[in-house]
Length: 225
Image (cartoon, rainbow, N blue to C red; front, side):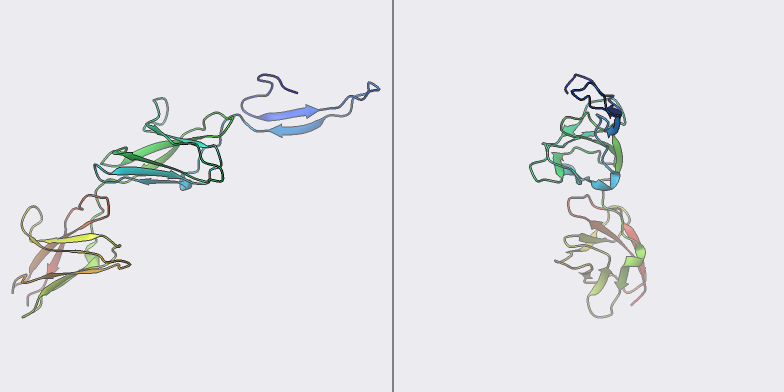
């Protein structure tokens, strides 16, 4: 049986009977049916990467099925989609959107929907995303060795492959004393500096994550030689 708008858009139950050739009708069998609206994506299935200005920002949605289409908005309701994915391919389970400077550099919230084949668009799922700026280092992840007669060392832990560590002599501006990139599959790096000074002092250390901007400077005290 086919009839336009026979069922409620919000879902419900129909009751089906069969009438025999003898004209007698059977008892009714209850059958539930789904809403016309696609189920909203769970926040845990949405990953947002806010990369530095000039690079492509990425939004990935998993737990999808063939034909699903993802839309991304910057408001909770109304407004037009900022971008729309291609339909999920046969056998696919995810959609990835990559658009240059799609997201706000200071961080914010995106609102993501899914539209399944022959369904209406889902409600919007809010997902917060971080700033483009790398998170500042924690002081307890920095160790300074002010050596006597050999290179001084600033050691930073809790890092990831490709992170770039810079060491400065001032909280703002000032001179860069040294820099080093974290090696493959490493989580720490040593920045060697010719001479910090014989007396106690401070260094100011930053990290720049892959496709992120340089973090704020973290101050770390060091003792005299």
